[in-house]
Length: 253
Image (cartoon, rainbow, N blue to C red; front, side, top):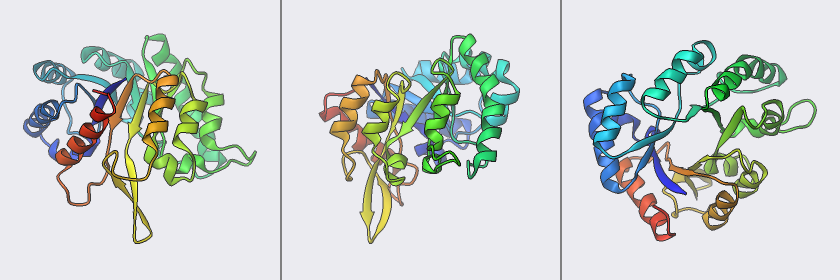
C-alpha cells in the first residue's frame, strides 16, 4: 500500500495556481509520492499533469464537481486521462442523504455516470461522512444500500476512518465488509477533548490503526490518503508530516 496526501487538508494553500504549485512541492518534500486532488483552485488538466511530473507525484484519485460527474461525464473522463488518474471521486452526496427520497435521487443521478466511467476503464469512488450510516425505511444503512444498488464494478468506496468512527461504527469492519471495493482509503485520527470529538494526525488519537492497516491490506487497498479536514490552528503541512512519520514507522511509504 502506498501513502498519499489528501490535498483538501491543504486547501487554504491551494487557492491560486502559484500556491497550488508550491503546495505540491512541499507535499513531495515531506515524502508523499501520491496525492488526492480536492479542494483546490481551478486548474487546467495539462497544467496539473506537468506539475505532478515536476514534483515526482501521482494523482491517484480526485474529488470532482458532482454536477460535472453526472452531466459532463465524458469530459471528466478525458480530463482524468490527461493527468493519468484512474479513480474519479465524489466527496459527498449533494445535499446529503436525509431520507429515502434523497437516496433514490442520488442513485438515479449517478448510476449512469458510474457505468460510463467503468466502461472507460476508470472507477467511480464515493467518499463517506457520518450521515450515510443512518438507516433507510427498510432498516438498512444507506452506505450498505449503495453497495447493493451500485455493482462492485461500477463504484468503489473511499472509506474515511474518522467519519466511520464518528458515526459509531467500526472502520476496520467496514473495510472488511467492502473488501475489493476500497482501492483508496482516507486515514485520519480522532481525539476527544472536553467531550468533543476532534480530528488529529494519524497515530495521535484513539482509532485502532493497526487493525485498520491489516484490514486494508486484506481488502486489496492500494492507496492510503492522509487527510485532516481541520488542524485547529496548527500548520497543516506539519500535521501531514506527523501522520507520514507515524505511518512510515509502521513500514509504509
